[in-house]
Image 1 (cartoon, one colour):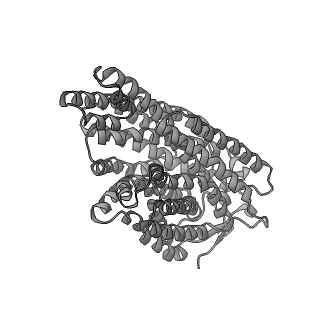
Image 2 (tube, rainbow, N blue to C red):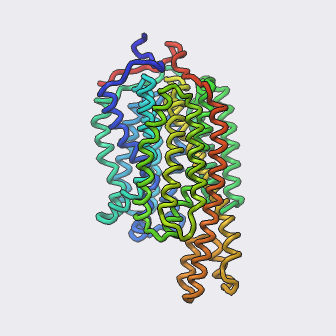
Image 3 (cartoon, rainbow, N blue to C red):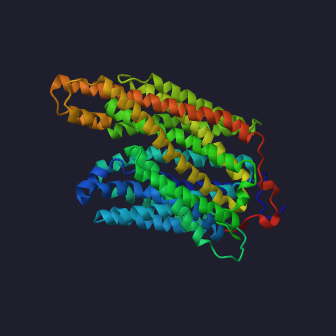
Length: 527
């Protein structure tokens, strides 16, 4: 066998590779936490830096926007210059930006630092997944490693608010950024010692900068437009932004088909499974992100939990997640086609979403926690196996680009789910609250109550006692109706996934074993 051959039945990884995986999980955990770590810090930042409303939104959103826009570029760059090299460059940028953000003296400085954090995150996410693909060449071990990677990603989003709440109870707001530093320093020290370098064979051609610019100009406006619609409903500005992004996306795809050295090689889509895997993964994120918007607000605004209490309660469903990915991997090892296990994961998630329909305005918190736990088990099963399948069917020397495409699909799925299911739930809330609030409510107050549950509860605080109670009760009931509508929408999406996954992915086999020796990625032993 070729010493660097990366077939599906390659040599087994040893202690060094598993230790390297543990090192890689630290930055991945922090990158995923940075999406949610500002949930509690915003009021403290607002007090100290006094940003405008627009600046405050950009402080929160710029990280995700830049990260999603840069993923494709960084994936292609990792294949070209080396995944470990890009990982270490990204860790340096992420650590430096974290320190600068912690000591930011103005809103503009903090926005810039968050943007640089997004660039760093875009290097770290595909690099860690591609390195997992390259280090674990045995199919069974790779399945386990990818399951661990998926669990770390899911855990980071849940742990972000908890860590943020803990730090803000003891330190100033900059601590939510400084917590990134030890992990990045550890990665910079241990990465060169434990993680081997992998990169594509040199082609002699220059990096396609135009494709990089086109990818950013395609992804960013679409994600921005979807998020704006999720927050404020349909409007001409966000719709034009989405249309412009799609138009640039068409130009990007055309260039990939015609360029001598495309940034995203069509080779990725020659295998039968990769394209469907990206789509199925986006469906999972559509359902999960779209419903999470409602379930977190439900715990805080309907059940009356503080943000930190809600975050801590949310850790309970994540316990079930810990066993989901390994159990799914074990089923595949026993010979069950991954397509059927993925379909089963979607079916489990559908049961969870339907269970959410039993949560009422006066239910105990356990109802939504059980529902969330069932959903999490199903979605993590899907995402861990889809990730493994996508990496299996992509050529090994394109693993960083494959990881970037997979994660870009996740960003699109999350943004679209938030917009579509958010709009659906909001429409039902507004319809229901119109019919249930007291008819004697002043018109100005009614307009406020009609917007969101948060606005309704704030308005109720300024009303006389009997009417305040009636408005709050009506708004909480209407929000629960909206959450039920979002749950039904999510259930429909995952049911479609349960049907489509076996149809599209049944019998898909890894393409790596058939890769020609000259196309196999070059592995350079770490110094």
